[in-house]
Image 1 (cartoon, one colour):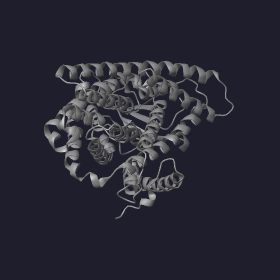
Image 2 (cartoon, one colour; image 1 turned 45 degrees about the vertical axis):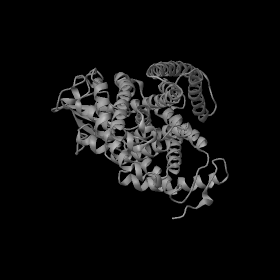
Image 3 (tube, one colour; image 1 turned 180 degrees about the horizontal axis):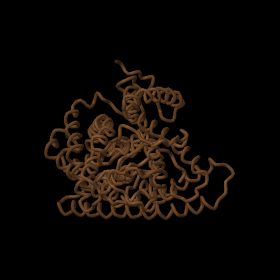
Image 4 (cartoon, helix red, strand yellow; image 1 turned 60 degrees about the horizontal axis):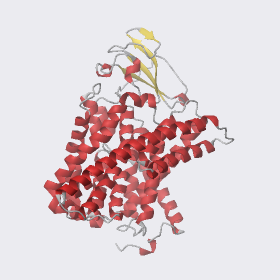
Length: 499
């Protein structure tokens, strides 16, 4: 098929409005159909972009810098919304686990994957793949769990997980994007400086310098995010605005300021934005909370759609055939060896998380827009072999969304980690209006009580409330300190809450 060159566009041209409106309309129709078959909507958006791109209809984007800017803008919106919807009370019990996975886990995954690529495929993929630094860069680019994909699948599928896995997975995916981005930038800079330096000593000094910069970025990002989050909380609770939508814009401006301020003084802006959003989202008596969350939910969907369509348009499948086999094998190694190794090793110091939960956590290593954007950064920086890095990462992202994205819910059920696994719902005669939520029941197992035997120790996901406990023929009104026993039947209300 001959590409339709008339569709070659500049991102600042008037044709963009017509193009975006058509693609968005088709994307929504595809998402409607895909939902029925359990296909991740992010995968459908990406495929639609590919079909409309250079090797499909022939739509070509001329300015990669503008594409990267729009992609990162969309990523910040997604991270911001994820932070606002994260409950500190639910995150606190798993905070150290999440941080360990998103830092040490990511680092270990990069090391294992990088050396695998170097020793197995280094000479075959050429360019950056011929050096160990280049292989580590490729591993760093695709090391993160994509927050957009995880938030979308977990929340849109309404998958409720045991052992507080929902908050753990969301915290990890929201905090390891910044980690992977920092490591990508550092490795690019080290490769550039190493090209102008000679000797092993110079390389090691650059690596040590990179380690220091990494620590500085993380610390500044954490401190700035938390500090500006608390300042923003004071502003939000003390200012009185006449229109509810203005609170959403105010929160957006505060979070974006945290991003920019942290970056300005050498910190990681994405991490600062995410932490700031968590603090703001947990503001007690936040004005217009429901309206704010609805606003950000809407622009998050728009950001996800725009970002995946845009990245799909950048792909050229005709240039991927020579790296297809290495990319698939690297992707499978990442899914079944490198990420599980990183997860298991980083969680060794922690108890209270079953082996099944650790195994499921290692499986939810979805790739998405984040890795593709990081790969695009290497192209813009002119890294040797960057086009191959982009093509490999894009292929692995498609593989991940197809294999992992479509099996998350079945995997949770197979491992008995889904909170609503019970086939028959026994509500003991209770009836509630539909708008209050959905009633489910759950039988307490020994695994549920591994982290403690009180109702509070279950760390139920946000939006889930236990409204009755049945023990044999006895009915108990639940409270946080109630001691549970194996065999207890819990009547659970699933639905959005204001608290």
